[in-house]
Length: 433
Picture 1 (cartoon, rainbow, N blue to C red):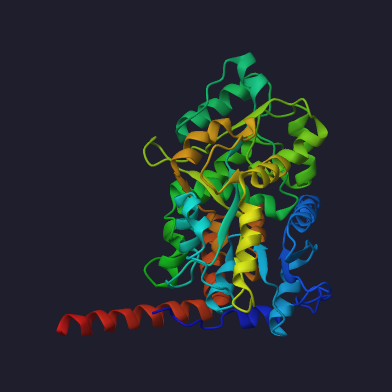
Picture 2 (cartoon, rainbow, N blue to C red):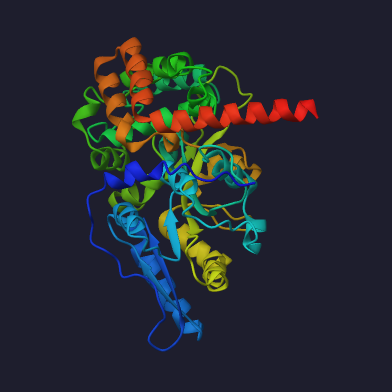
């Protein structure tokens, strides 16, 4: 039986500033079935405008409206308070998705036929985002991104540098690059969110993928799980610019595009910004090697965009028809090309050469989600990381992480522990039969 949501979403929504409303769904003026999508990626607004036009031109019985506002999550949460739900929402696989599943806002779409075409790795990632296990599937993973290290391919070829596969090999590579008078890494830590990129990419090898869930269950602490991760993060700093906190994300992208560093630890999502500066740059990527051995290596990848049908949707068949259109190979390929994305759908898609070094992990489904997809935004982990990198006090950072987690996750921790207690009681009762 599906566990009913504990409505953890409610406090988060109530803190949201009231935002302008998007017009609710209803029957189109010409009698067509109206389907409304609100999706959270404004940078993809042009793509979705073409999708809307193409869909409406090819369907006589359904009219599709797609909104791509800058503040989509604020708008969605405000509409949820008013019980004014779009038919489909396009969101990332992060803590907001977890809240929405928990609050029973989303419909179970496990019966949608397109689910059979999804890369199993992304279905596993979606399931892991549930605060506690629930029956059903609530998101159609559409496109993903991948994080690791971008590198200047021509520079590597010219110097004969080899792609590292272990932590020691990477440090040796950085020393070799520095000896040539070239900066190994560029960082843009003036923008706090960029501090999460190397953290996430190393965490998939150095911390349990379910570290946050183990903490919520009271089985461990972040001080126990994140110690090595924190130490190795600090070890990267000497290989970057003297003051990485003076440079923004745009500064770092520009510097890397102009050949001012050999590598840039960031996600594939940075490619459009980098190529806008230098369209001729030849770059590739590789998985961030953070452990001492090659075994257990995994790609840091998560659901960047997925589509959820809301439980309030009046016409699920029409919503599925829209999903079919979005999930058609030719339309997904256009999105991949425009956003330098990884398809969550199995099939013969053409990926950017930027992802060549990660292709074997993508094809095999060997990927692990971003740790920060489990962090509540109120906790501001990016700011915690920036402070840690400035002060370089590991013990204080880990203590603050544990303290902040308990503060900002009280409701979730209580819900998880109540669920675990109930499961334990049920197992004991079952053992008596």
